[in-house]
Image (tube, one colour):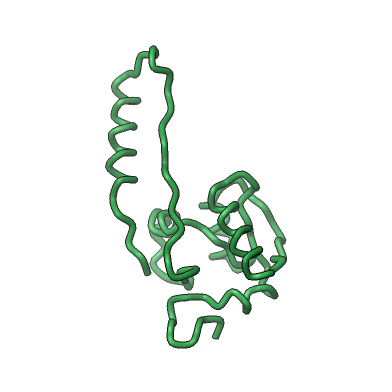
Length: 130
């Protein structure tokens, strides 16, 4: 098992160095978190592919290309019912703020205003941990 003994939902980072990884491109918050995690555990991941999309990374992992680190929200949005193993990395979930920027003097049409409202509702919900 690649899990921490007594914690079947937490991956033992020392056991993932030999697994091929699908990574999102540098600059993504989840990539920054993954790189910090690998560095903390003195791991140089075997990155076999980079993509600009967490959904693509997840789908590639689901296809057996390699392991990936994606936000829980990506897994939830995929609506995948089975075929994958999902582990929490670390004792506390990694989180970051989601922000919408627009010019103060700009006009926001109804669709844009509705998008902002949906984003507020979606991303203000406390995340569940596994």
